Image (cartoon, rainbow over all chains, first blue to last red; front, side):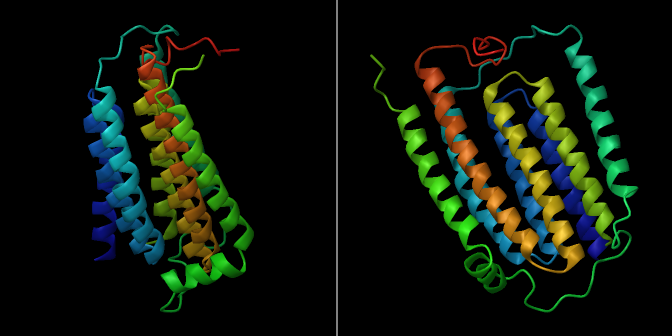
Length: 169
Length: 99
């Protein structure tokens, strides 16, 4: 059962990712990314991390993607020119992508990580639920938590300044 | 399901995102491909967290999500600003800052 769920979610995630880079219209790319994000949330649930999966669905597939849809609707699709600054870029790029994947896979699988090839240790029932993550965030990782809240505030103010209607003098 | 499947899937998704950045010219799609790469990193973090058996990697993944949201907000603000100034939305035409 777990294998079936993993392969369904993995195919969804990979298909969504390929859809993002293959679609001509940016609006369809955004929709493909939503499929990808939901599949990743399923994978997070398979890894017994319920809070990260919920945050993925609520924050990403909910809030961030709505932002994308609004901006795509505002800016519009617009065709991409076929002009290549580097000759043969369209043929070199897939080769580089495949090389990057092979390199990453070899680097991870040939490393001597102890738990590779296992399902990981048995974990308690509360592993990865909101209570456990909240306790970690507020006890051990309080400083990164506060720093990220400051970063969110800065990003919101910066986006308002960038996208404001007033033209600079 | 053993952990290495998740790690290999994460590597595959990361390579797909990098391929999209190399192939596409629209800044919006490039931002989407950056999201793909960040999410691939998140998948690896959560998989390693499950492998080690403590929740710290998941906290890391949540922070990465925050960073990704900030990056999206600033990037989309830039795209809207570029669109308002009637500049072309194409990373090959917007090359004045190139070193």
